[in-house]
Length: 364
Image 1: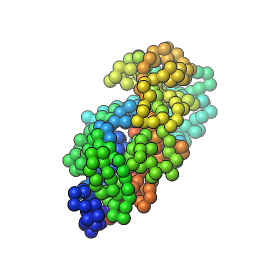
Image 2: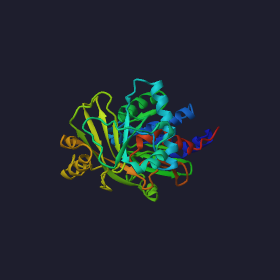
Image 3: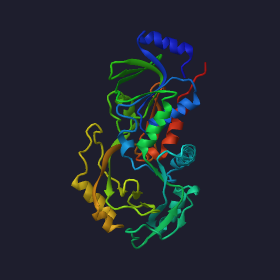
Image 4: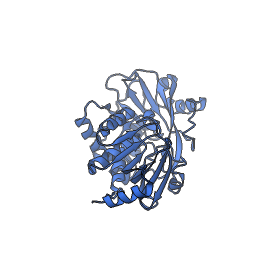
């Protein structure tokens, strides 16, 4: 990272009034917060700046279901999931007050899918056959249910805020500060902020969530081929019973999640509406959203489908490969971290570690 000589050159180039920092992390969702945390732990004493256009934990993190499942559809995602599984276990052990909630899980799929399930789910998941489903959920003919260990869900925004509060002792955290320009130069990465301030960073991590096409970094990210997708989930107006498990419907890529602290269930399904503008999010659920989601839910829980009258709508970034993107851009001083295909919370610890790996810290 920045040596004394490099920082001096950057200060001279930027002018007397411009600030110089070692690392700027742009985006303070769960990925950005964990990345900043990882960098400060690897390089104590480095000047780290965490910026967000909104409050910490806003955007996709605020509306995420926060479900962590010990699975991955590719070897790379399984490796990242295993890393994240260890990370969250240790984080909850060290910070028991964080809003991380263990939850049982049932996976519903065709009986013939068992070999694939045993490949996708980690050994830690302890995949085991069972017919136990929560009340109101039925098992259609030809399908089976498996029990899974090691799952949890989180208030993702709450976790991000707690991480940022801890970060404030070793880094600078700024909220409601938009980045207007990012320019990789010979002495560092020049940033122009919406407040009028200009600064230079030795390294930059872009963790913008669904804001892939923001003018400041659109040219940098265009070659990645990542896209934004609408995400919609329904709130099922039915109180979960103690011990109710989450239920994953493999064929539909959908799940039911009990949220006892909110007094309802969440039904997340796969919405296929692409390229919305995250600066102009949809004004709530549409009749089409309700119809699509209810049609899926009626196959498994008809009564619950009738209890869906509200929900949450937001956007997220998708890579198109099924694997997150963590990649150095341009001259290597800027790293993109994200496009996790709806699994940003689940894979955030592994994404953060890989982003920190790409920082290529120099020693004085």
